[in-house]
Image (cartoon, rainbow, N blue to C red; front, top):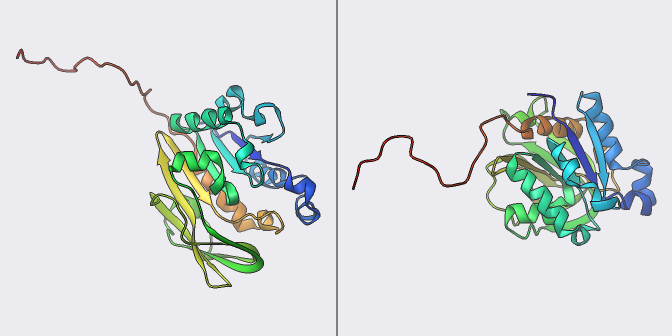
Length: 242
């Protein structure tokens, strides 16, 4: 298996519109995440909302093993054609890491079949992401919990299907809890939803958050296997005459 090829998709509007976001991510959240992943040896490309086809062309997706998605203000403006291309590639085996507000992206909601709705609050409150699956590949090398001094609160109920594996549960200073690290399989593809990452906080500079994303890339990468054919199929053994 070759080293997974990563495409980071970032809306890349909030960093240009909000001074507080720009202070943390002067070159965009995608470059902060991308710099870390390149340092881990992953080939990384970038796509943003304002590119033709949102940078999500057939060619770009065909060369992607794992897609990382961050969006917020433009969820409903992403074209249905691009969403169809991404979802088809996930079913074919491309991994998807949905970060923070990507729970409301068209791609994530379509693959989940639910609204993705949550409770939320922006109050710069402490978050602890507790590792509840210490033997899972995504939590390799992490401490018992990741503590973030300031984040946006997401609270239950989170309208998603039951995860195939839950790896993080968050506690917030205001008292809420949230399923913050959720693994799913759709077709041949693996999906990881990872909660933290509000644009006005330096979350993507946290080494444990970055390690989690790197671990998730390795976990979500496609696995080689036989080609799936959905068609009329001849019997492998002789059939008796009825």
